[in-house]
Length: 158
Image 1 (cartoon, rainbow, N blue to C red):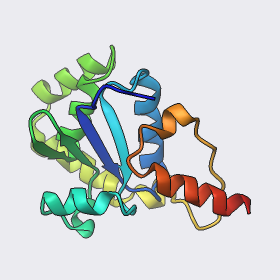
Image 2: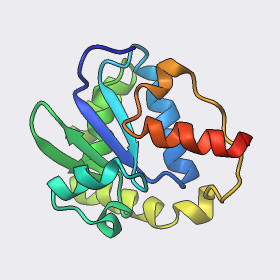
Image 3: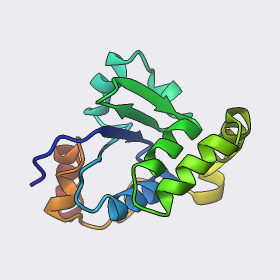
Image 4: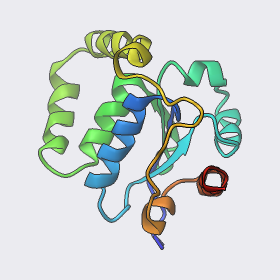
């Protein structure tokens, strides 16, 4: 069980295959779980987090949300992606810094919006009944909606 509180919470589209890939990417690089916790946008656990910050689910579907618990701020789009990168080990840390310094936000966000708008078409989405891997207890402890994930997995095996 992870004892150190995280710095960030990533609220992501739980049916988006691209978002699922991004979560797995972060999980494999934040090896000790020091920086990130996760929560699917569609989960009951996400609702109070979004409400607290005045974000509707429709708004959240346009971009994943990164809550910085230390700085008490919300990031979206390319700022969120680059902040995540700078919190990961090299070479991602450098890529995040270079991206933020060298690419203007309107260019970064324009590219982000293009991909986000077409993510289901390009990468697909999970449909009801799709199989998923059983996460380990260590990984599952990093999800704020772990109880909902466990219940969903139990229902699929019954």
